[in-house]
Length: 497
Image (cartoon, rainbow, N blue to C red; front, top):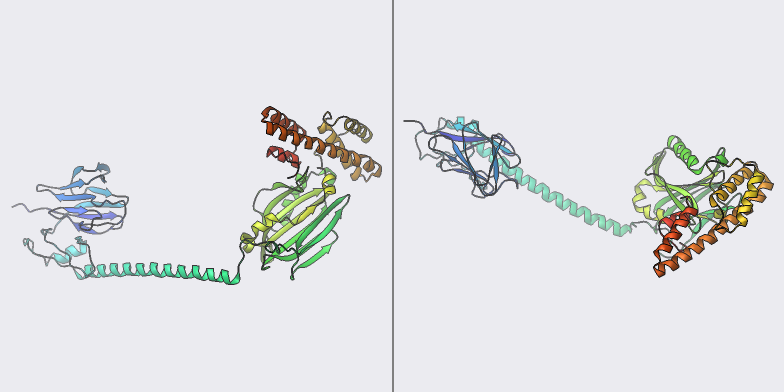
């Protein structure tokens, strides 16, 4: 009589890798259902994924349930499909589980085999490892279809270890969650008790009563400006000429150190070095020599943004001072051949609290006279002699300002200003400065008229008139170093900002 063939499957990958399971004569269901014969975890396994059913002649029929799928020897079998497996067939289900079909040398009736386990075992899955098979070969009667196989000591120990590890995982999760809860409650208590302020405010901002100190400076000619700072009981200042260093504090609790440094220095060959060039040289110098690390590309901003404004480059940075790290904002300005640098910084670990107040309070003010006397160092000067340039500029300014060639007037006057101050020529200074002031005043009058005209056209819905004013203003103010250009690009047509 031909011996009945029994089968088992060995998992190669996934959470069941290395484990053997017998294929029941009545069929083995693999899925997440509670009564499934083999129950892997994972949401990629269906409640009823596949069934393995031994055939009377040879092989095992694999049936795929519902909308699930399986891969047999690399070929996909979709829902409600069947395929006959022979020993050595490779089957993949879900994302990770892979098993191979093998013949089982033990001629036990698989419908009568039971695995006894500890009281908390819920799974009726039958598992046969190679070691179990060898241990059972002497104790199971080959031809007794009614025998029952009990779990070995090794199986029971594996089950106990699994249950213990599961209980420990649950305990760790519960303890971790409880510890996190206590940490949140404790942090909230500490913040409420210490009244930790986030974001930090400028001293006096909450109460509305400010007590600010200031250093007033005059940078010849007519360069009037000041640095202001919060006065606190811990404020310390150090001054030398127009260079100032202030150590004070921010916050209503005054618990964040606030460090300001303002320096004025002469740029070598400053009347021939543009603001952008001297800025690039400064940034390279402090990076190499003073440990500055810049966190962003520079942005051009304006102090006193009415009329033409006073332009400066701003960028954030960190720097190491001995064993202390600062973080803040640097403002780089030029006034004739002088470079003005303002550093506003707090300890790096407090920057997240202080960023808002550092952006809101610039700690620096320039006077209207300083704005009126400001000019950018030209990249290229005119080569005509000074007398001829003065005559041409005077002639253009005697015209109606709308008819004057602004680009030529601007370059002529800036060339003359550089020559006058570079050579310290008092006669030329006295001649060109009034012309520069007159040019700036006429520019502003013309721009104010354009703003009023634009508003009139806007109320009337005259888009042609609005576009004409925009194009004419951009032609007159082409440089982004003039704040009026910025306002035009942003479509802002109020005289005051």
